[in-house]
Length: 99
Image 1 (cartoon, rainbow, N blue to C red):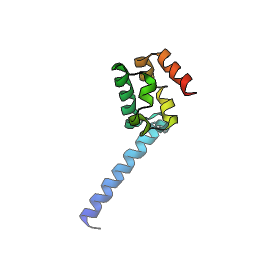
Image 2: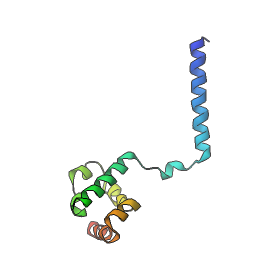
Image 3: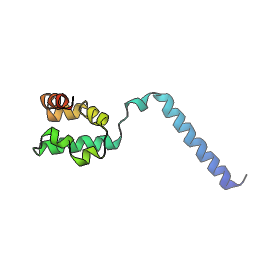
Image 4: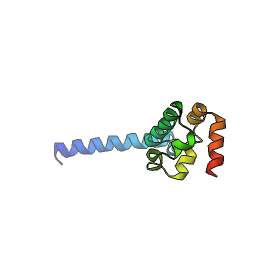
């Protein structure tokens, strides 16, 4: 095995060890991760609401509809930072309208 091949093998070995160590540290962490896309959508909803747009209009916005499913939009209303920014009453009203 050439020196370059040995270097590649050592590098891959280190990557695997780190990945295994991270997995063993918290094997269920993938259940609690959020995508950066979901974060961007939540930030957009909060920002547009602060600008005075009604939540129903924001959720009907092409930017939101093109990037989310109905299930993801429903989950968006469960995010604590969205509820805190918009208010529980606004979120509950949007949930009732969606039903």
